[in-house]
Amino acid sequence: MADKDINQLNAERNKIIVGTSIIGILTNVLLAGFKAVVGLLANSIAVVLDAVNNLSDALSSIVTIIGNKLSNKAPNKKHPLGYGRIEYISAMIVAAIILYAGITSAVESVKKIINPEKPDYTPVTLIVISVAIVVKIILGLFVQKRGKEANSGALEASGKDALFDAILSASVLASAIVFITTGFSLEAYVGALISIFIIKAGIEMLGETLDEILGKRADAEIIKKVKEIINREPEVRGAYDLILNNYGPNKNYASVHLELPDTMTVDEVDVLTRKLEMNVYKETGIILTGVGVYSYNTSDTEVAHIRNDVQEMVMAHDWSLQMHGFYLDIEKHTMRFDVVLSFDIDSKEGIDIIRKEVGEAYPEYELNIIADVDIAD
Image (cartoon, rainbow, N blue to C red):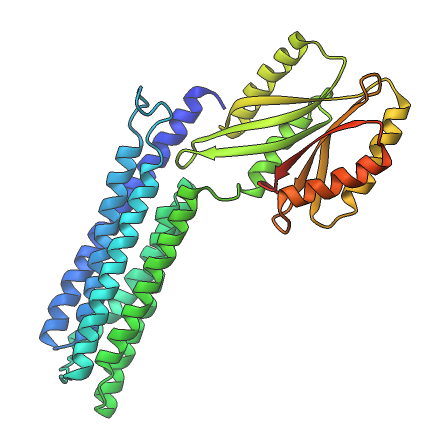
């Protein structure tokens, strides 16, 4: 994947996001307008709140477009890694809009429960709501599909929200049918139910966006792909401590540790590192910003025996997930290795236990044991 290909990919992604969002805006504004008029004429709080929900969806799409445009600003001295994370901030604004709409809807519904008013449905009302349900289903499926194509969490969320809106509109239609057939009004209660689901959607979206900003576990498939590319090289015995830093959708920087033979020269390591950086970028679009090195013994069978023995001791604990970077210097009597610990144990406690066990088995060696965090699958 050359530079041109990456730029083309981003351009196509932006085009999908903006184009799909515009379709969503127009559709939601039209639906909101029809529902608002019908809701006011029918004196239906549920229909009016459904219209407010559509309007908040349109506003969310506008924020998504603005966020996408701002996130594509070129890097500069102040922000050398670009503005990609603005998309996450825009997603938080969208979540806040949804929460506000939900809370407002809840307040109005409670007022109607306390002071009920009978609605006045007409055949036109039922037709408008029915058409809105069909339109929302089509829009939801379309937006979700385009979101997956563009790797846009905001679009995928909008698609799911549209499908959910169709369910809420169906509940409004059901309450209208119940009133027409029985004379019993569920208006305010349906409005309250809609508001609860709107609030829930806003909270969930806010949580997902905060996860992106705080930094969440990297996708297992991406980690696997990068490690496969690295491990293709015959000199590499293993790739460890792979950390992905995300600066917006499709903008990832990474660092990794490689286990290489102790016979390699600095020049050979430099050539290998540059090759890996190029291959990883071409195949994934991820930029390797740092490559650390572990050396492993190549000439002593006693070292291999000790390594296997130490690995058995380390891996005997459930909270010990992996050992790597093992190197033994027999002349200087030093032993070093890293251990990946799960979140089930305090890292200091885990290392103290391993240090005690290995130290008792090999008291003649000075130990240098580093605790690694379980940051990737």
